[in-house]
Length: 465
Image (cartoon, rainbow, N blue to C red; front, side, top):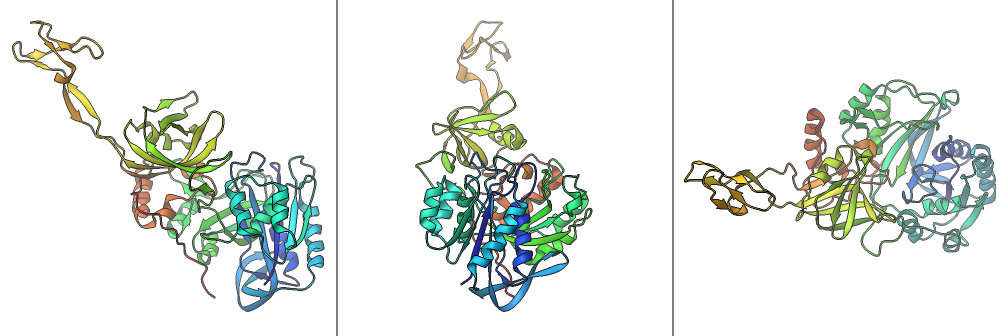
C-alpha cells in the first residue's frame, strides 16, 4: 500500500502546467519518501467546456520502496528513482502540508478560471469515478461521496479541481502509454522554443514505438506546445525504457529537468461504447451514408450517416478529403465528440467499412443510322440525334465503373489535429500501419487508410528492472 496524491486545475492559459507542479512535488517528497511506480498524467473528458487546455490531472504515489529501483527522471541535477512496490509511509497530514505549500506556491490563483485542488489518500476511489470523469460529467458532490473516508481532500476557490484530482487517483489502467516530459529553465518560460525539426524526424524514425511526434503532411513539429507553459517538449510511446534515448536525440534548447509519466493518452478511454449519448460525450456511430457531402463556409465538410451529421472541420485539413469522397450507400463507422447545437458528430477518426460502385457516364448514346453521338436534352430528359431526330432514354448512355480513390480502412486527421486521448492508428494496427505510414511520408499523401482489422488493445509494459 502507498499514499496516493492527486492534483488538478493549477494552470491557466497564461502559463504554468500541472505536470511541472508534479515535478516540484516529486523533488520535495523524494527527499524523505520513495516514488512508487511512474507519476501519472491522466487526461479526462476532452469535451468539458471549462477545461484549461488538455484537461489533464496528475497522480503521484509515495511510500517506502521495496526491491530494485529504476531511474524515471532528473530534477535539479538529481536522478529520480522509482520502485515497483512500496509500503505506506507514516504522516499523511505532514505530507499534505508539504503538498499544500507547493500547490499554493505554483498555482495560478489570480486566474478566475483556475480552481486548484489536491488529495492525499490511503486508498483509491472506485474505478467508476475515473470512467465517469473521462467519458461524462462529474459533480463535486459525487466525487466527494465516492471518495469519502479514504484520506484528505483540499479544494481551493470553487473546488472544481477536486474532481480531476480524485479521478486521477481512481484510474486503474486497462491500456496505457508513457510520455517523457521535459521542462525549460525558468528564465526561458514564455520565450520561443528552439527545437531542431530535423532531429525530431530522425528521432521519430529511430524509435517506432513512439507516436504523434511530427506531422509529415504539414512538416510541423508536434512534440512541443505553443503555450507559454514550462514544458519544452514531450515524447509519447508504448515503451518507457527507450524514451530517455529518444529525448537525447532532440537537438536545440536543452531541458532543465525531465520526468516519465504513465498516461491514458492515445487509449480511446474517452470513447463511450454505445447509447445513450449524453452531453459532451465521445461516441462510436456507424451506418450507411445517406447523402452526398456538403461543404460549409470556412471549409468544413458535413455528411449525413444514419440520421446524424458527421463533421470534419477545417483544422483537420486533408482528412476532409476522405469525407468528401463518401457517397450514398457507403458504410462507415466514426469516432467523434457529440455536439449539441447543431447536433453533429465532430470526427476524430473514420472507418470506411465498405464502398459502393459508382458508375459514371463516359459517352452519349451512338446513333447507328447517322454514325454520330446523340446530344443530351437536359437533366434526366434523355438524348436525341440532332441529324435524324431519333430519341434515346437516359439508360442508353454508356457507363463505366470509376475508381473511387477511397479504400476500406481507418482514416485519421493529421498529427497536429489529434486529441490527446484519441488512439492513433499506429497503436491500433502497428504492423499494417508501419508500412502505410512510411509510404505516406515519402509521397506526402493526404491521409492514411489502415485495413479494418480487429483493434489490438494490448500495449508493451514497463520493462522489469
